[in-house]
Length: 263
Image (cartoon, rainbow, N blue to C red; front, top):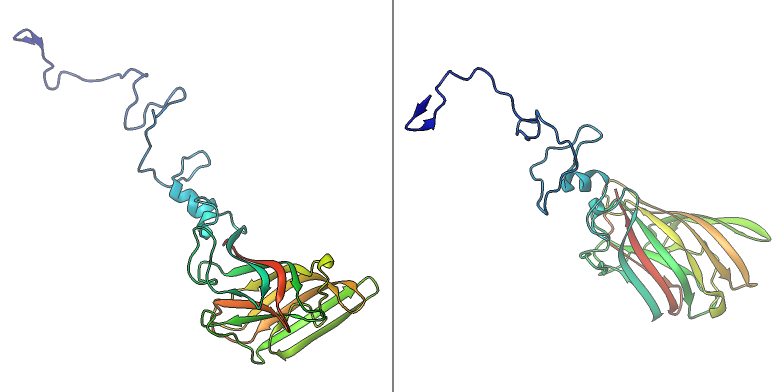
């Protein structure tokens, strides 16, 4: 009917409605039939995905499969990847002390609760003095002091082209990275290189464990050596810093890097 020239729909007069299939309805009864552009705008307020083809928010992706900026927290990298936290380069250095993270986007103590396990890389660590050992010691007070008591246990398997041997200590005052065999200071031989894994150093339930593998030139022959190391710091106190130093003299050159292993 018309009222004052305008068509009016009376209540109860419409019994059914059929929508044009090209119209998108908010209740989801009409699906898109082609690719859609958002014109530079965002889709917001998405629920978490369930099925394989469901859309996901950035927060969901970051929390479950990695995302965010490289070099960030564990949520910012794929599970098991290495996050560079701190680096020190020796130049006639008495020690390389790891106390405070110094890489971009990193801050605070070297060892924190954001990682359970850490990796320490040793790259061409060259002693200034011949026939010395590389010693590794930890700190529980941010590097104000380092534990040099008899609180380290270690086992080493060492080998060369001519043979192999074992060594270790139940109560050493440091972890001997060279497994009890000393290093050459010949710059051509480029010192010691390898990797040490530090397992849950920030834990407080028990002793801290290390595992690693290294290669260097022994000063005695000289002879190229390799060693596998298993060691422990026999304290339940959380470790938050560490250092490497020679048994005598300085570290002439070389680089050490600390990484966190993403959870």
